[in-house]
Image (cartoon, rainbow, N blue to C red; front, side):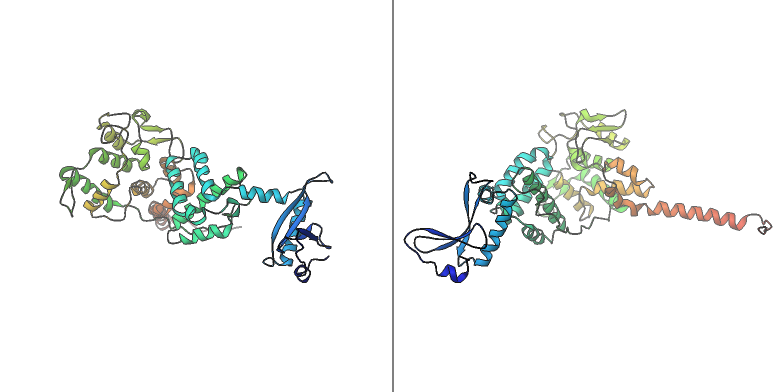
Length: 405
C-alpha cells in the first residue's frame, strides 16, 4: 500500500498491534495500535546481511506529523543507513547526552585546571550569569546558532562582556566536540559577528598624574576622610607602595600584588615572574620602582603582604577609589596606570616594539593602541628635517645650471 493521508485514515483497530509498509519507500511504515492510534516508523537493519539486527525508529504520531513530513524524515534516515550509520543508536545517545548545565560543570572542572585563576573565575561567572539561565536545560546536542545569537544580543549594551561570553561558549562547545558530546565541526558559535569594542584612547596625562601625586601626599600625611561618615582612614603604606610600583613599571596589578622577593634580581633590575597573563616574563624594575621596594620590610615571601602578615594584598580598589576622590578625578581604573606608563613612553619617542617588550605584550596589535601618541615625536622629527632642508635650500651657494647633454 502506498501510504497516504486517506489510506492511513482508513486503517482500523483490530484488537492487536500491526504495521503497514509503504510500497514506494523501503522501511517506511505506519503502526496501528490496539486502540487505533497511528504512528510512523522507519524499519531497517543496522548492518549488512540478514544477520544484522532489525531496528525500528519512531518518527512521530499521525496526524500531528503529516505523511509528507514522515516520508521526508524516513528518506533522511535511509540515507544515513546507506552510509553505515545507525539512526536509532544516535537518537539513544542523544537522549543520554548531558544538558548544557551538566556539561559546563564538567568543562569547568576538567578544562578549568588548564586556566589561570582569573580566567576560570570569569568563565564560571559567565556560565552562572548568562549561559545556564538561557540554555542550561537544553541538551548539548540541541544547541544551535540561534541560541548563542540570542544570548549575545541580550548582552548588546555591554559589548565587551558579550564578546567574552561568546569566546567562552566557543571554547566550551569545542571541548564538547573533542569529548564526543557533539559532532565535529558543529560549534554553534561559529559565524557569530562580534560587537565592535571601543578601546580606550584617553590616557592619563601630566595633569592627572600631578593630581594623583598630590592626592598621594595628602593621604600619606592626613589619611582619607569619608564625606558621608566623617571617619578618617589611614593610607595603607603597603598599598601605596604597590600602586607606585605599578605606575613605575607599567605592570599589571596582579603581577605586582603577587610579586615575591625571590623573583627580584636587583643587580639586573628585573623580576623574573614565573607566570603572568602571557606566561613567564621578565618584569623590568627601573630605579624608582627598586627604591620603593627597597624601603619595604620583609614580612613574608611577598613584597606586598596582607594586613595580617600572611599571603599578599588582595583588595586595592577601595584605596584607589579614595585616591581618585582626593585627587578629584573620576572614571580612571588601576589598569590605567599601566596605560599611563605606555603613553609616556610613546610620547617620549620610544618605539612601539620597545614599549611592547617592556609591557610584555605578545601581540603587536595590543601595543598599536598607543601609536597615535607617538605622532608628536614623529611630527617633531619631520619639522626638524624640513627646517634643515629649507636652510640648505635657501642659504646654499648659487651654482650654474647645466643642461643635460
